[in-house]
Image (cartoon, rainbow, N blue to C red; front, side, top):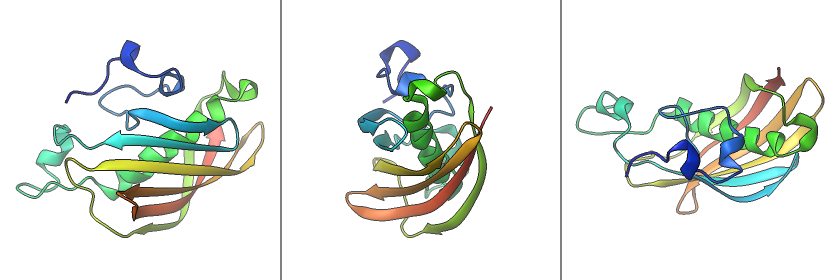
Length: 145
C-alpha cells in the first residue's frame, strides 16, 4: 500500500505541513482541537528507511514513533482556529520510553493529550500502541512559528 496522496487525505491529516515520505499519519479517529487527538499510521514495509533498519529484520525506528506522535499532536493544535496559520516545530522530548518493536504490517495507534498550549508553544503527552500494547510514550515540547 502506497502512502496517501495529498488529495486522498482526511481534512484533519491535510492540516499537517508534512508530505510523503515524512508523513506518519494515515487517518484521524478523534480530535478535540487543542485538547487531544487519536490517529493511526500503518507501517507498510515499503518505507525506504526500513531497508537499512535493519536488513532482513525491519523495525520502525523509535525516533520516528516520536515523530508520529508529534505529528498527531500537531493535528490537535492546528485543528484549533487560533493556531491554524502556525507551524508546529519539535522543541524537545522528555520521559521517552520504548517498550515493543514496531514491524511492517503493524498499525501504530497514536494518542496525544495536550497539557499546555500558548501562542508560543506547549507540551503534550503521547502514547503509541499496536493492538493495545504500548510501544512508545513521551512528553513532547513544541514551538509554534
